Structures are given as structure tokens and as C-alpha cells.
Amino acid sequence: MKLFTKEVKKIVVNNYQFLCVIDQRPENEFISFKISPSETKTSYFLIRFTWKSNWVTNLCQPIVCAKLIKHAINIGWNYTTKHSVVNLQDGDSLIAQLGLDKLNH
Image (cartoon, rainbow, N blue to C red):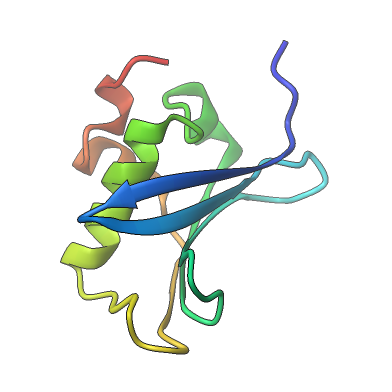
């Protein structure tokens, strides 16, 4: 049985270190996936996923984290700028779009 907690992953993408905080605590209405540069936490990219999405992908896998970071950068998130904040409410749409459902659990 999987324990639903708050996990922190360190991931390097494009020679830059990021922190991914995946909050899967059961008291939350959504799973939140927050990406921030490891140097600062004033800039971040927040994605919300429904609990249903947890059945089709493992958001804590490093390859999933890396794909979500690359997507954030590709759509214009400037992680090197202070206070660069992006909130994406419908993360479930990214699962099929980025092929996250095809990655091994």
C-alpha cells in the first residue's frame, strides 16, 4: 500500500538543479506538484492533479518530474527570474499530452 505524503525530489534538467515537491497528503483536495529552482523558492511552477490521475502515472518518478520540468520551461516559465510564478490548474491534461501514462510505474 502506497503512503500518501509530501515528497521532495532533486532533479537536474539542462545542467540546472530543480526541486520537485509532490504533495499527496489525503487531506488535500488535489495533488500538487511544485517545481522550483534549487537556488530560490520565490520562483515556482505549480501543477494541480486530481487524485484520479494517480491511478495512471506515478508523479514521484524522476523521469516524470524531468518531463514536467521540461514542459514548464518549453511553455515559457523563466525559472531564472525571481518571482516567476505559474499556476496550472488542470495537470491531468498533461498526462496524455506528455505521455506520462506510458512510463513505468
